Amino acid sequence: ARLPGLCASPGECQQSYCYVDPMNCSTASYPTSYFPQLGLQYSYLTCGDSDSQEDFVKQIRTQLTGQTFRFAYPASSRPWHYEQDDGWTGSVASFFQQLSTTAGFQTVQKTVSQASLSLFASPWDACVHDVQMQLIDFCISVVMETD
Image 1 (cartoon, one colour):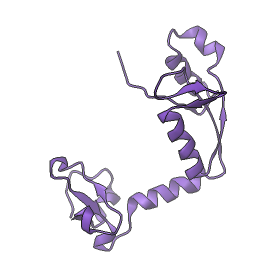
Image 2 (cartoon, helix red, strand yellow):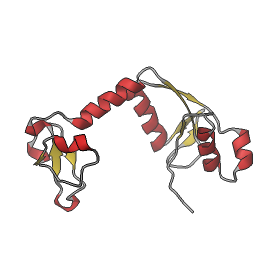
Image 3 (cartoon, helix red, strand yellow):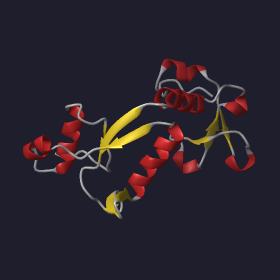
Image 4 (tube, one colour):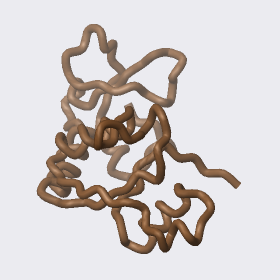
């Protein structure tokens, strides 16, 4: 199936994919955002093409494996990330730990810099500023854009 005008990149439209019933399909399949009300999933492998999502994950894993990244949590924010028993826990903290293990990269936890905290009222803004200033690589949190 090819849906002209709905492809994120030219190469994406060149791959064949089929809509499948995930209950009766043993190959990798993914939910479609084109027809969410139908509960459809699509698969590249079922139609004999490569699985671009798996290829993408492999490419990312290859690039991340062995790398070391500096990160900070802006502040405690239950249930997402919070300090407990000399470490950080919560759903976002656990996800990031699992991601680093699965992708094979190392992490070094930092704190948000005092310089950035002195410039911004919000520790989230200060944390993002630390990324901009290349003091850390990631500011780990659940965030949303506000005015």
